[in-house]
Length: 183
Image (cartoon, rainbow, N blue to C red; front, side):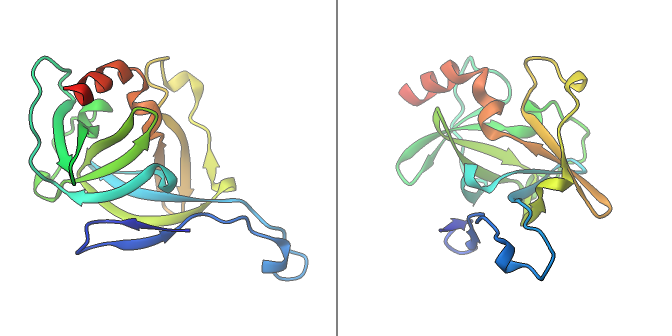
């Protein structure tokens, strides 16, 4: 199943992960499960998220502020007639290193239990395939109960990619997001 990532002008197609079989490998090799991640930049770090959670990536557009919400909820945006709450992922993850380039910011539209949510990131990089064996779980003692949105760290050559679960990022504020959608 192919999935469009990007605006109509910049869409790329990503194929959903498929199960690999031994027949696809040479004699004596074993199949290994892989993960497709959308990589993105926040500050000077590379992060990734499961491509199956992302509906599309759009350029930064007008965001209507909503009063009396948490600082990281930037407001709502209109996505082809759908009102989408939009969260600044840098603020939500408490990344304030001053290294972000706001001129290239993009919004990743994710499918969550609360519906569509927009996550503002510094820039979206690419879709990569990561073998499951290259992903280590995030150490439990790093995170408190309110910050379980990091689900692993992928070791890719000379680069470490922290994997974010977009569903978990908003779980603590699900009722707040529902209020934003209702107006």
